[in-house]
Each structure stands twice: as C-alpha cells, then as structure tokens.
Image (cartoon, rainbow, N blue to C red; front, side, top):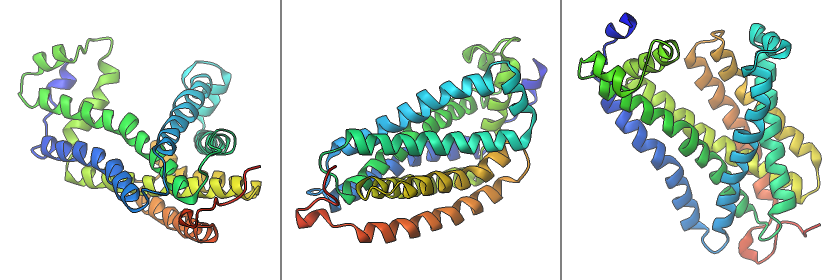
Length: 283
C-alpha cells in the first residue's frame, strides 16, 4: 500500500483538529446554555430532546433508509442518480428538505402538544442542529484526529495496523487519511462557520415549521422545505465537484440570512411565553 507511504501529515493538522473537536462540542452547548439562561422559565428540556430525536429518526433512520435503495444499493435507480449530476443534486436536496422538515412538522404537530411556545420552538431547533454536530460531524473530526495522530509518527505500517486498514479496505480508507493529512486552520474555519450557519438554519426552519403548525398554515411547511433545499444546493454541487468549496460557504451565508430574516418576522408575530399564554390554542 505505497499510496499511504507518501502521505505527510501537515504541521497544523493535529492542532487545528483538536481545536475543531473542542469547538464542535462548544457550539451546541453554547447555544443551549445561552438560550436556556435567557428563557429558563419559558423553556423545557424535553423540547431539546425532541429536536435531537426528531433529527435522528427523520434524517439518520428514515432518510438513510431511502438513500440505501436510491444511492448505495446497485439497481437501475441508484445507477441513474449516481451517474447524473442533476439527478443526484435534485434527489439529495429534495430528500433532505422533505424528510427533515416533514419530520419537524410531525413531531411539533402530533407529539409536542404541551408547552407550545416560540421559545420552546427555538429549543427544539437547538436540539435538532446540536445533535447533527455531535452525532454526525464530531465523530468525523475525531476520526481525522486519530488518523492524523497515528500517521504523524512516520511509521506507516503501525498506523495501518492500528486502523486495521488492509488491501481490501485501502481504497475506502485512503480519502479519509488524505483529508486528515490536509486538514489545516483554513479547513477548521470553514467547518466552524458551516456549523454555526447550520445551527442558525435549523433553529430558523424549526420556527417556520412551528409557525405552520400553530397557525395551521401548510404554506409555511412548504416554505421551510424549499428553503432547506436551496440551502443544500451548493453543498450537493460541491460533492460532485461542480463548484469550489468557498462558494458553498457564501451560498450558505446568503440563505441563512434569508432564513433568519423570515424567522425573526414570524417569531415577532407570535406571543411571548412570558405572557403566560401559548402561541396558539391547541387543535
């Protein structure tokens, strides 16, 4: 496996990965602490938990189940999608938008019927976005850190043995090792900014879907789905090598600003929980 012998771990890889891991934990924790401290009397922890579970079920169980058939398994549908960039992008953004936003809608409408307040809607969004970081992004960063640390010793054989990389798994493992070796402070900044934007997006979209529920206006659910799809368009194009990575961050910042603007307007229309009333009578 000579391809691994030429890999050199950058000087900034390990320190930048350590900082990234710390910040990935700090981002959701900080959002939660700040919002909970400001609205302790108006919020319930169960809404945070509901947001986390809602994401895991909708995005990591149901959506991945569809992905297995449409992307991973070898069949006419998966071959068409994987071989066609337009189909791949359209499929990816549609699945993300539909599963996550409809998942939010179902949980908020049919399960979370108690303590329906705009403050708890934000708490739900923190749980949704926070668990995405802790369960999806953080493990990847930790994996990169472990890989970078092992290969930094210069003993490729020991690193391969420790990671249990064999001739059969080398092709799949090589991109991970290369990514860990190339990780630097620039990549750290991109990942941190991306997660901050994603947290704001998830909070914003949750408030929009929540507004759809309490005001019985399905149009806002559709709006959330479309906004989610637009937000994910450039990331999907980047995966196919169509656009450079920096454009993804600019695109994400643009649509996050749009989502935050809409969210602020809707949030302001709803009653504050401090008034002792719910945003809308339960159906």
